[in-house]
Amino acid sequence: MSKPSIPQGTRDFAPAVVRRRQYILDTLRSIFEQYSFQPLETPAMENLTTLTGKYGEEGDRLIFKILNNGLHEKKGADRDKLVADWDKMLEKPFTSPNVTERALRYDLTIPFARFVVMNQNDLAFPFRRYQMQPVWRADRPQKGRYREFWQCDADVVGSTSLINEAELLCIYRSAFHRLGLPQIEIKINSRKLLAGIAELCGTPELMMDITIALDKLDKIGWDGVVKELQQRGISDEGISQIQKVISVTGDNEAKLSALEIIMAPSQSGLQGIEELRKTLAYHAELQDTAWNSALTVDISLARGLNYYTGVIVEVVCKAVKMGSIGGGGRYDDLTGLFGLKGLSGVGVSFGIDRIYDVIEELGLFPENLSVGSSVMIVNFGGANEEYALHVLKQLRDAGVTAEIYPDAAKFDKQMKYANKRGISYVILPGDEEREKNMLSLKNFTTGEQQMITLQEVIENVK
RNA sequence: GAGGCAUUAGCUCAGUUGGUUAGAGCGUCGGAUUGUGGUUCCGAAGGUCGUGGGUUCGACCCCCAUAUGCCUCCCCA
Image (cartoon, rainbow, N blue to C red; front, side):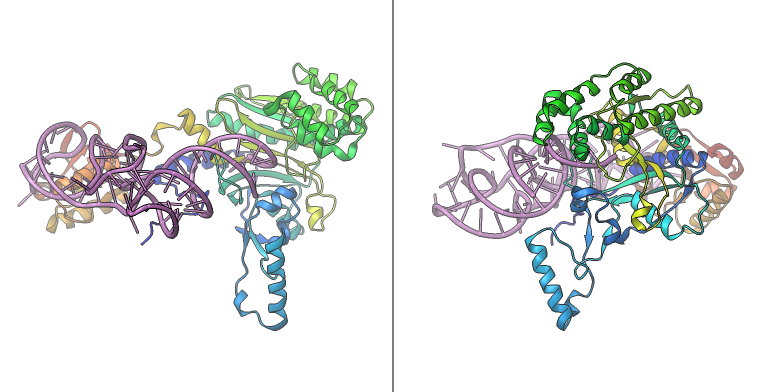
């Protein structure tokens, strides 16, 4: 017999862990609701064609595909096609509906876009939805990287107003404030600004190459970025333009003003700057002064998902060594991919597994999450058991979280169980208590014990 | 998809230049203690040394493959 195990990159969540995860989820849910977003859930699996081509080449590779059922039943021509496609798959990256036509959800944004297109006649636009569900990626697991993890997304589709961007920034800041996370930095940039940079370089078609290289600035430094830019075919002239752009310093407005001068030749670049400026202005109106996270214009922020077209954001917690814990941006034509043109959307995503890891590493989970105030009734068997069951029902009717030890096991064993469970109170309904119609209530924290009535027990325990 | 490190009891880890019977702490179970846990004392159980091959008279140790975890690249939440 082999030891049981779970698939690579997946985890079981023990009760205490689930409670902490729920604490994060509940916090986010209440903020989403406060900002008037509506809940949505979509299937764990999508048609493979819905997902492929939406996340870039790397993304396609990381989609978890589901093998079709009944492959062995294929007969005749169908079988020949299947065998041919199978051989093809063994030779190169290739998928065929003969082999796989479904896949696990890779993110929540594309399924959302798919939902919007399918339900466009019933939805009131602008449509604001939040969604908290697991997603799957066939990535190589490492710190903060799992093959099954949860995303919590809020998106607004059907409005191009930058008020939406500003509100989503507020959701981020409010959430990280409520969760008590220190040293949060929300980086903000615009794809239009990045397109402008590519224009300045005289190579607008290399925008993706430029942004991917720029995105590594933090990690490999300017010299590393130069090397990467050269490899990607950017001219020395272009590189010096890029250097001018990223040398811009100061607060957000100072950066934007300086960029405005550099970007003068690029209409797209200027538009990006204007959008950032407007977003920040709206945000300033809506923000709460208690929020202490930083909101920083960062020209080097790129974001890999290739459907973003406008403002993009990414969240990092500088207190720990961890990848981004959230990201998002505007996508002008996501629903166009499914046949609904002219519907712009913008959204943000929280990576709750990473947020969990950050909170855990910093020891910032509230103490009382797993220590529910609960009551256990000791089982003395016989007539006492009957009495105990009666008491149990009364407690539950009164709204008390309570359980009875189901077996009339040795007293010692029952007490040890209560201790290990972290039970707050133990009730002892024995012969004496039953005859007097009283109960002995033991406070398991202080060790104190008293014989009182059921009514008094309820008052004590609540 | 590429590279590096790791894997020994339920958990955390020792161990041997390849040599008979692989250890500790914690935990578990039993007893002291069949109405008083968390403290104490006594005792016990628990391992094909991740898996599969190979080298060797002999492998937990060396070699190869593979799985899982961690880390780097890539990419991302």
